[in-house]
Structure formats: structure tokens, C-alpha cells
Length: 326
Ligand SMILES: CC(C)(C)c1nc(N2CCN(c3ncccn3)CC2)c2cc(C(N)=O)c(N)nc2n1
Image 1 (cartoon, rainbow, N blue to C red):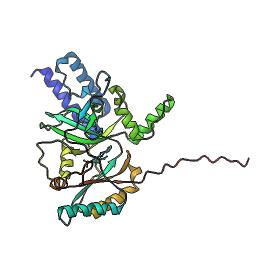
Image 2: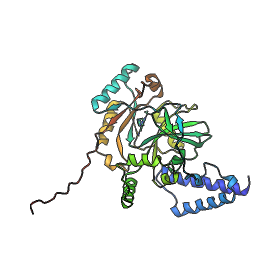
Image 3: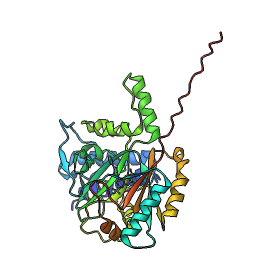
């Protein structure tokens, strides 16, 4: 390996490490100026030696040309939808059905915040991000790889050489949503109604340069296709995803029974506004993968998971009280 290649690989490793700290762990260890200096050094070296550029290089986040259309992508493992629960009784019924089907007294669950964004699927081959797609109708989605490459918290390379497909929710943080709408107001463009629509509109851009400016983020919540998988539980999957360099939501909780799930759900009903992103409920999943297989999925949604939906947040519209007395 030439000195140049050594230098390029060293810069890539450093930048991938700093990128992970900044965008995935939200805990940068170097000032932005240092990151920019290293990035500019790598850009110059790659310009001088374009034959050494690889798709997983940190310089390759924003693709060159806009697309004409998004290609269709078939999900080898369908992306199921979730049945809804609207109150605690629904959760107890869910738990009872599961315990009866499994003929067990107690079932462990994992409870996760339900991020209000867009479900996506990410595929990695030989440790490199090769394709990203929208959920679509669960069986066929759209190839939005170029736009997903611009999401800084999506790693372009992971240390898993076996093919693996993961699923997650792309979202726009509340602050980014407010800033985007302020800018659109100034430009007299129509405003996005909420962060979810803003994220959807950003991922639907055919020009990745626009998606790159929208400050999108992601939380990865499941492993899809993974032949080499050996985990026994979903919680192990979440830990493994985090070790691989994926951004997982830190608020997930392993619950020993449905009572603990209910406590978790109730603890979050009034804490939503503390979060930097919108959530629209809690997703509850049977933790043991062997139980998930036994419970199999009904047509559209798994019997081993359910979404507890929070009531839509009443939007307090400040009514300007006009004084008619004068
Ligand atoms: C893997 C399973 C199927 C259990 C699953 N499915 C999910 N979803 C399915 C329905 N989806 C959907 N989207 C659009 C139309 C219909 N269904 C949107 C994703 C999950 C969404 C979240 C989240 N949002 O934070 C999450 N923490 N875990 C999920 N887990």
C-alpha cells in the first residue's frame, strides 16, 4: 500500500470516528475546525487521486447529480405495520393473548419510543452501505439511497462483513423543523405542517443536495435480514446495532412483564415535550425472538408487537383576543 493510500485510510478512519461521536453519540471530542481541517485534507488527496475514492469515504455523503425518478425496491423481508392500542386494557389484552398462545405465565417485552418520522430500510454488504429504501406499502418501497447517504447519523461503513439489513425511522428534530419553516416563510414558500411531513418532503427530493441541508436524523430500531444473526432477543439486537455504529434511541427499556410496560407508557405520556423530536406513542415488542417466531405475523402486522398511540397533542393555538368594547 502506497504512502498516499495509508494517509487516505488514516484520515477516513479518523473522520468516521469523529462523525460517529458527533452525530451518533451526540458527544464530539474535537472542535468543528479540526474536523473540517481533516475533511479538507482528505478531499484534496482524493481530488489528486480520484482512483482511490470509495463509496464509504466520508467525502461521499452528498451525491453529485439529482435523480429523474426513484427506482422501486422490493423488501425481501416485508416491513410490517403495527396494530394499535389506545388504552391500558388494550395492552393487557395484547399480553393475555400472547401468554395464552405461548402457554407461559410471563413474557418479557421491550418498550421503545415511537418516533414520528418515516420508516426506512438500510442494507449493508461487506460492511458498506449499499441501498436505502422507504417502507412504501411494506413490500415495495422507493430507492432513496442518495438521500439517506446525506443523513450524517447513518454510517456509510460498519464492522459487520456479513450482509445485514436494518430498519429505522428517519426524522427531523423539532428545532430543525422550526428553522426550516422560518426560512420558508421568508421565501414565501408553503410551510410544512409538522416535522414528519418535513422529513417526508426532504426524503422525496430528487436532488440529494437539498436533502443534505435538511438536518435529517435517524433511530435504528430493528434488524431485518441477517443470515448470520445469533441473538436470542430483540434487546440483544438493539445492543448489537449500537455496537455496530448505528444510532439507536437511548430510551428503550426491557420490561419483565406488561405491568412494567404500562408504567413505562404512563411515564412518557406527559414527558413528550422534553424530547428534541416528535413521538406519537410507544412500540411494545416481545423480547425473545423464538417467541416472535411462534407468534408469527398475521397478514399485515405482527402478533408480537403493538403500538400504544398517544392522544394527538392538542395544539394550543394562541387566540388573540380582540377587544370589541372600543
Ligand atoms: C419491527 C416492527 C414491525 C415491530 C416495528 N415496526 C415499526 N413500524 C411499522 C409500522 N410503520 C408504518 N409506517 C407507515 C405506515 C404503516 N406502518 C412504521 C414503522 C416500528 C416503528 C418504530 C418507531 N417509529 O419508532 C419503532 N421503534 N419500532 C418499530 N418496530
